[in-house]
Image 1 (cartoon, helix red, strand yellow):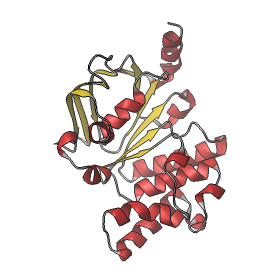
Image 2 (cartoon, rainbow, N blue to C red):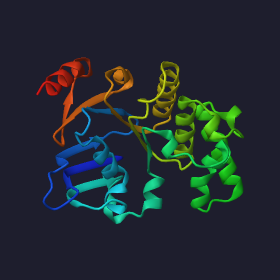
Image 3 (cartoon, rainbow, N blue to C red):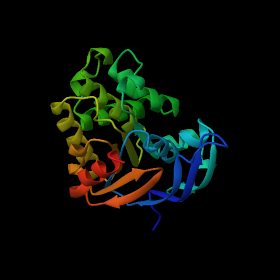
Image 4 (cartoon, rainbow, N blue to C red):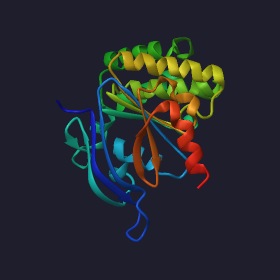
Length: 239
């Protein structure tokens, strides 16, 4: 069976004489699971996200060896618009992703760039707002929303492209406890709908919804028991 995402012997560095940021990673993702990647700042988590969603090599260059496959296709052979309909990414700071005057316009932006007709765009807006519980904010300006609400709008704009894999790159790090609860509920609902979820984290409190947890250090991944994640963080932070 073709996996949603396969990484085979992946190495990456930004410049020829620089260090390997990604250092020999192999990873297979199962459909409909939540995988969490835990690690200290600077360990390469965000660079790995860029490799998984095509930002590397299509936007950021570097020296890459190995392979990332999305549903069996090498990322380097896919065009970014195609990748965006298979893999979506929600970043740590929603303000970097929101730029439209209303929530509705924000969500419509991606489907409009896929040249969908107005009926399809409207359907996708409705569906994305319903999943994230943001329907009542449809005509609101994103700047007027709370941090958690902004993050839900960012998620809704990603969902409007109907990706099958969604990456959350420390997306819960800048919101309050109530916002975290709401976001986790949304992530679990997406899992129930068959979406494959990757959560990149540094906060162990956000691991409770993960099915599998990997610890990243020095560009490498190692699967760990999520109940012992604190031991891993403590060990590496003292080095």
